[in-house]
Length: 94
Image 1 (cartoon, rainbow, N blue to C red):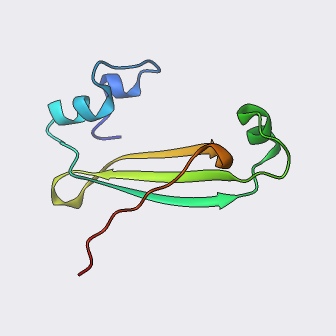
Image 2: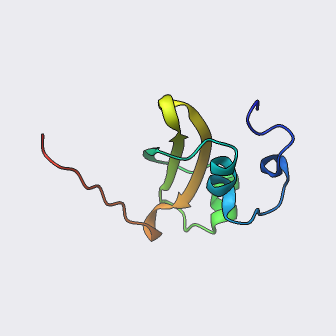
Image 3: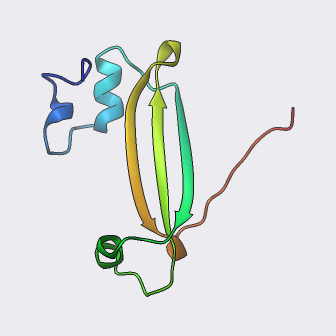
């Protein structure tokens, strides 16, 4: 909250360029995003909101965005219909 207080980040509306642009203007450029993805049984509320057929999983993503000095500057939880998304991971072997 020390970063967001008094800025458009706390408004419940879209900001031009999105949160990353606003954070960069405040001196906190995004440097790394880390997603933790899990598949699970959706809640009844999620079934209804996502209009899921019964028996399908939901994908839950916790995204944390870090700035300089590994400072976390944004955290987002997203829930998506599992049958509509595909995940891709790319890495270079060490």
